[in-house]
Length: 92
Image (cartoon, rainbow, N blue to C red; front, side, top):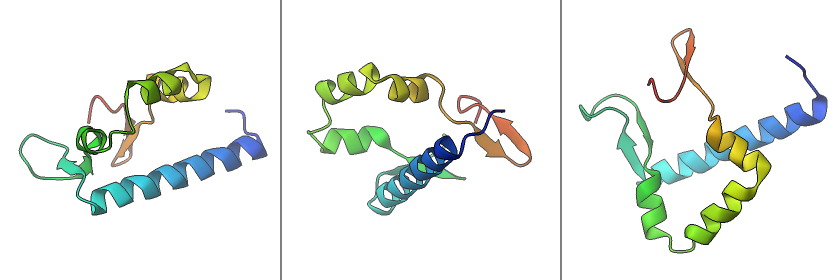
């Protein structure tokens, strides 16, 4: 894996900011259980957040998907750590 100080710094800043934003959304009530059984870990309910915030519209998402960096993150989202394993999001 190639490491670059500036990329490491940007990655850390992005991860920290995103984590704080997700925490704030959960605290504001935008959360759901990850599993159908309604137990276990919770995650942000993005659908509820978007539905209540009209500034987030099709134009907003179009601008996001036209950005190379954002599109890469959407196409290859981060993985989850489950115990000592790293698994894709669609498995968890």
